[in-house]
Picture (tube, rainbow, N blue to C red):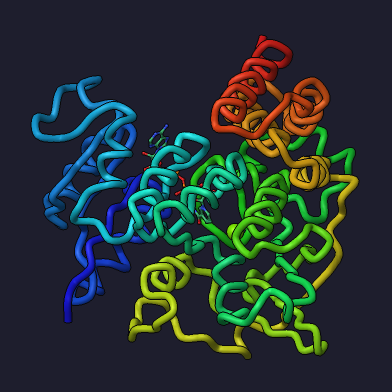
Length: 378
Ligand code: NAD
Ligand code: MG
């Protein structure tokens, strides 16, 4: 059996460390070809010692002591993403910082196992075009999109009537608008079913994450927004559903663990034996329930989906203003409810900027960050 090289961008984060747990069990099939991180040199060094990748990159190399032999700066993401030893690039960076690496890996014909949904939301048409030009392939890591990929199982888009993306509802699923006004950072970071990085955990509390996922599904599966719906499923066991034109509905189920979609993104369309995650027990996971999304309490969701429908630079403005507002919230400088207000304000001011070239998307991204900083960051 030949072993396939995997580059992990963002190896010190929640998805990165989970991926390394999976790869530690799958050493016959895969080896780690490259690792990158932002600042956590200590953990990166431990990972490098254990997995012996050909390439190691630390964006902030030199800030707290220099690591000779390691790549540095933003360029290290591209160096890892295009490394000749890497057949698969797991992009587990958080935020728009992941876009260039996604594009570069696809241009080189690599498989991108995509956790970094922000890069697809921000530059959907650029990413699809890069894959077409370079022959690269985009495979989702997000659990909902992995579920949809597995349910569609190669059937043509014309046979799919609609996608139903499940949402846990986050920590504030039952909170009233009044209670939400006083939600603290600690409340927002208490996700009921998933342990994740801080940014996506806040996105799950505002439901901005579900809007990002609707846009992500639009680009991954090439379906119009009218055929993509969301339902709340608090147990996070049914990872999503696909309704076909004959009325049949397929769902993919599993215990809530990112190890399963990460492994599948590496092996798709094959399946390989693995036993790192507890076996599925329908009785202990019962009951499985579904409820509608309360859109009035979570304005970020509707703003994001509307931005997706609008197209052009609107999704990039949504993504960047959300990132900037979440950073302010994580810093204790704005309240939970201000995140939606900041996104709405940036979209009002900037979503009509012309064009969807890479330049115009990057300009819209910077303008949206500046807007939120100036209007809400003081
Ligand atoms: P995290 O914050 O735990 O990890 C982020 C990683 O990216 C770290 O290794 C960090 O060093 C690196 N990084 C951060 N900023 C960077 C920058 N500017 N340049 C280069 N590297 C940088 O985040 P996470 O929870 O692992 O999420 C990563 C991505 O996966 C996000 O896009 C998120 O939406 C997506 N995702 C995460 C989960 C989950 O369970 N955690 C599930 C689905 C999708
Ligand atoms: Mg998800």
